[in-house]
Length: 124
Image 1 (cartoon, one colour):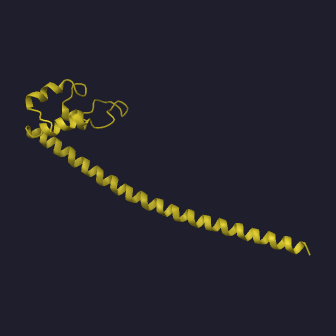
Image 2: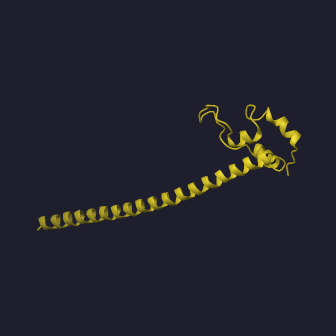
Image 3: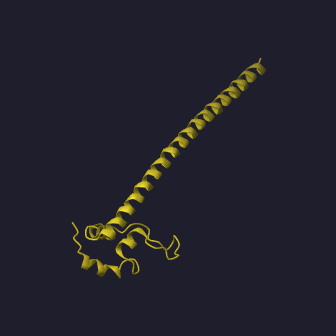
């Protein structure tokens, strides 16, 4: 388990995420007008571990980490709901495609039988 003490956290403050604190680097902190292209692609696991361990010693950081985890839980719930809705739409689309294929096959059989009977009728 990674053990970080409060005096060590201050040493990371200037090096991680362009001068932001570990927690600000982890959860985004204040927006400085940057766009999505300059934002970090994901959460740094080292910064995450440092922030979680620092939250043990700093009540303000513990509140921030708790708020961050609450927002993440809400995001997961929204994504799960979206996946369920998307699944229903995909299944409905598959059913429509299935019926479309059945109709297509029925039309092909109808024309094949029509042409075969007309060809047999002409050959008398």
